Length: 380
Image (cartoon, rainbow, N blue to C red; front, top):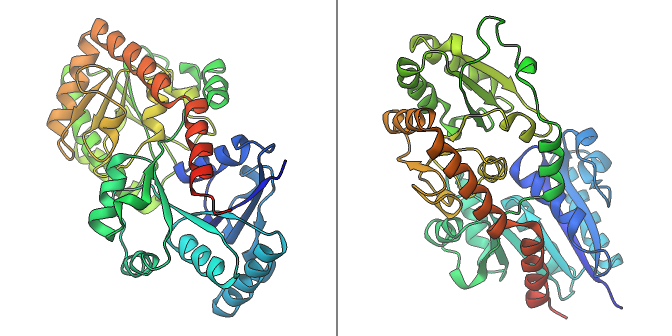
C-alpha cells in the first residue's frame, strides 16, 4: 500500500502547552502511520525541545543553519530540496509565516503538492505583515482548516479568504491526556493554602497570562464574588508574560483581592488541578476554540466563560455552562456566585458539559474527519 507523504511545517514552536503546539503533537501521534509517511520541520526555532517529544523528531532548521536573513534563504533552499527528495505530497503549515513558506516552496518544487493552512483564531492579532501574507496566499490556492465556525467566518471577513477553501475541524479531546490528568489529581495540600483556611471554594482559570485572556475582568469579578463568599480562592494556571502579570498583581492589590489569588504558573497537565475547581472560568475577550474549556468539560466542571468566538460551539448557555458578555466583570461575578450557591445546578452543568463534549469532540471522531479531509484534498 502506497503511503501518502505529509509534511507538518511550523515556523516557531514556543511551548508544548500552547493550543497550536498541542494540536501538532496530537496529529503527529494519531494520524495513522499505516496510511501516512509523516515528516515534521520547524523552520526557525524550537524553544523548549525537552518538552516537545514526538515521532518523527522535529528537524529544526534554525538550529541547523542559524537565524537571520541570510540564514532564511539557506533554510528555504534546504526545505525545497527536502520536499523534492522525500517526494512530499501534502504540507500542513501552522502560523502565517509557515503557510507562506510552504506555499512558496510547493510552487518552486515543481511538484503537485496540496498546501493546507490553519485558521485558529478570530483575528485578534492581525499584524500588518500578516495581512500582506494572507492577501498573497489568496493567489496560491491554499486549503485551510479552521478549528471553529467562528474562526472560519473571521478569516472570510478579516482576510478575504474564500469560505469554500476553509473546512471546520474542531479540536479533539485527547483521551490519553484526559485520563493521565484525571487519574493523578492534585490535592489541596499541593496548593499550599494556609493551614487555617483550606476549605473555601475554588474558582480557577487555565490560560496563559497575557492581555487577550483578560484576567483583569476575572480579578474584578473576584471582588464581587468575595463579597458573597469571602473564603473563595482564585487559582490562575498558566505561563505568564511577566510584565503583564505585574500589572495584574497591581490591579489585584487595588481591588483588595490579592490575598485570595494564587498565581500557580504552568503545569504539564492542567487537568490535574482542574479537578479541584468548584467553578472553571475563561474570561478571554477573543477566542476561537479553547482546549481549556474542553478540559473543564471533560472534568465535569461547572463553567462560566466569555461569549466570544467559537466558545458557544462548545458550551450551551444555561444547559452546560454560562456564557457572559466579554469584559463584563459584573455578569461574570454574578454567574460564578450562582454556581457556588446552587450545587445541584453546578452538577447539572458539569454532567451535561462532559456528555456533550465527549459526544461531539472525541478524538476518534475528529481523527476520522482529518483523514477524510486529507483524502478529499489530496492531489494525486
